[in-house]
Amino acid sequence: MGRFRRLLVRLTLALTALTSIATCFMLTAVAWVPPERAAREAARARWEARGFTSYRVALRVEALGKICYQQLEVSGEWVRRTLRNTCDSLWLDVMTIDQLFELSEEIQELPFSRCAPASRSCPCHRVFTERGVYYDEDLGYPTTLLARSEMQYNWTSADFWRSWLRDAELPACAPSRRRLTVQVLALTPLDARR
Image (cartoon, rainbow, N blue to C red; front, side):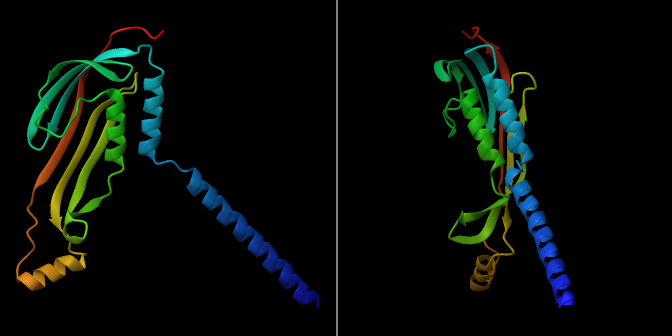
């Protein structure tokens, strides 16, 4: 009887220890914030603490093989005046700093790869080879946003092998590379916060 009781006590202690360790791991996993998000949140806090409400921003955008520029006057995150915008031919609207923060979040949350040409069939995939967002150390606004990707064969997909066996040739994964770069060339405060 004493032997059984000691065994029962040991098992209870072991289960309690394992439960405690598992709880610690789960709490750590829940509390963990990805470094990109932590950097974005810290930068956003610096931007929110800035000493002005209106600013002039100059941007350079490289997308779809084209380069364009924007120069805007912004007040309270509303574009009050467009001084220059050569980005009409791109998908890009005029970009305030708030919109750059939104775009930075989208870039940082891109998956490693996406199916192409469509999500229902995946013989090829667009692989994101580089993603980056850099922030101004003082004011916190995004200074540079980067996204680089290229089309590759999706060797791990059954769609790739079906396509190859059906057509007796490799799928048409055009080796296109895409680049998106948004740079803040200048940011000038226009007033003091009231």
